[in-house]
Length: 149
Image 1 (cartoon, rainbow, N blue to C red):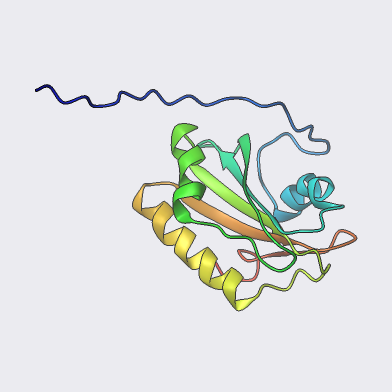
Image 2 (image 1 turned 60 degrees about the horizontal axis):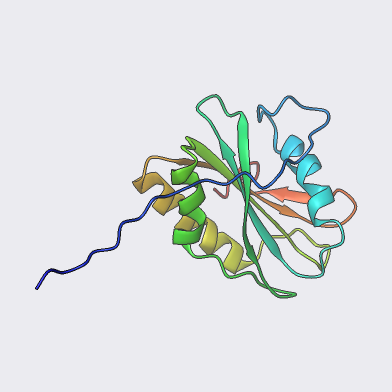
């Protein structure tokens, strides 16, 4: 008796556009990314975790909301982080999440997650350039800027 195997086709769907001002989409500084992402996190009452997809010249080509969590945590699995990067042909990535408390100081969980995401992205040849944590009123922490990436 024949065995049926499902066939799949992957499709990347553009769901809209995020408007940038003040930079040309080529990431040069963590401040550029923090300024761009801050309005997306401004009134969030829960943690949101995004992945900014970059091409080989560090030009932002896409943004993916990986997870929406709770007041103090967002569950992020490496598989969900990598999927849009691979499908979108990204060469590099920057991850960004907010702290609804307003304090952008990284937790031990933030540092452990960053290490894990860096390891898995290195395995597939995608460079994790930074992990930016957004607080209130323009406050942010760049793990790359602080030598924690």
